[in-house]
Length: 273
Image (cartoon, rainbow, N blue to C red):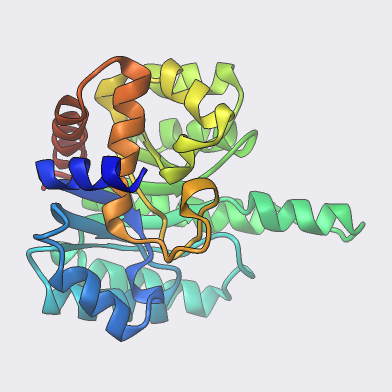
């Protein structure tokens, strides 16, 4: 496996990590990743944010590494809903920094948080999260920016309804899982999805890759989220997107080079890089 990885990396198809929480790494680890990007054939990273504090850290990284870090600003849904004052402040800040921003994200609905609450018998009100998401979708439409979405399983159907409501065509559902009917709706709408390193060992994800149009896929790590299988015990690193490209090449019957170039082209096109 190590020899195969070395062979892939030596082919040096430059690619983008289409979704990473770069600001959640230590300063030393982030600096090391970015310093080694050229050697790892990493063309750039779409760095998403969690809240205002996270946006500020992402902005600092993008200012320090402008050729590599493509910032996305938003509010991750898997956390307590913000107060009206906090939300207004964040939206105003994003509007102020819109010119330097690649996308609005990460935004979406709290599937996992809601599931945890329901399993323990606690009440959970989804409506405030929907209202927050709508504020961000309205802003993205106003600014003409792509959106980076956390919306899985049945949540994706509701999010598709909202995307249509706000006329948003450029939507990236990261690390998506869901029913085939939803998958086909997303594909027909022109929305993009991205695959993480779990495509090497998760059959559900491999089947999804066979359903989705290759012109609408990207590769991501969602780092620093850890992975299993051949990545057990490793820190998630942007260079793992080359393993994603190799897995997609195997599934599609392509060469690694063809898969890498397709992922590069798709990400550049979607994010207007």
